[in-house]
Image (cartoon, rainbow, N blue to C red; front, side):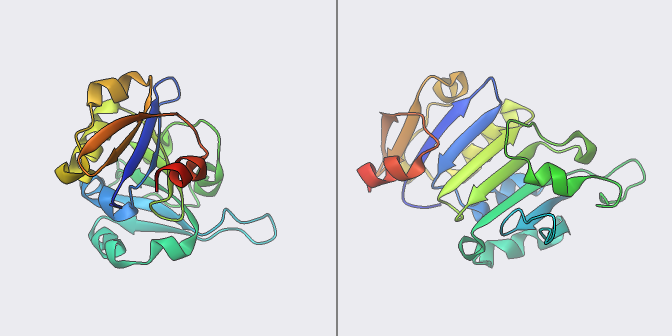
Length: 187
C-alpha cells in the first residue's frame, strides 16, 4: 500500500473508488478464490484486442513482485470453479467484453466472482465493483495497515463521504473520480 489512502463508496452501484491500494494489497483477499481473469494494459481495439490471462490461485502471489504500475491500466475479476471443477475458459465466456466494460457492472455471474476491478497505474486509481459488502470489508481489513489510520467501516458502508487516511489520521474528503485533484491537494 502507498503511504496514504483515499477512498469512497457508492452503495447504490456497489462500487468502491480508491487511491493508495495496490494489487499486491488485495492478493490475500483473492487467495480463497480459485483464481483471476486478468487483462494487462489497455482494453484494446477491434483490430488489436487486449490480452487476457486466466490465472489459478497459485501464481497470484508472484504478481506481488510484478511492476504492475508499468502496465498502465489493468482489469481483473476473481473466479470460482464451475461444476466440473474447471477454470473458466474464455471461449465459453465473453470475458473480454466483461473486463472491457467501464460502466456500473457488478461482479461477473459467469465467473461466480465477488469482485470486478479496473485500475490505472497500480495504486493510483482503483474502481472496485463487488457482490457483497462483507467481502469488501474483509479485503480492506487485510489491506489497510493500522499505522495508516482507522477507517470507520460503518460510515464507509453508508457512502456519505470520501475519506483520506495518512500518518494515523482520518479526514473527510470529497467523493470524486478525479483522483489527481485530490492527490494534488494532499501530497
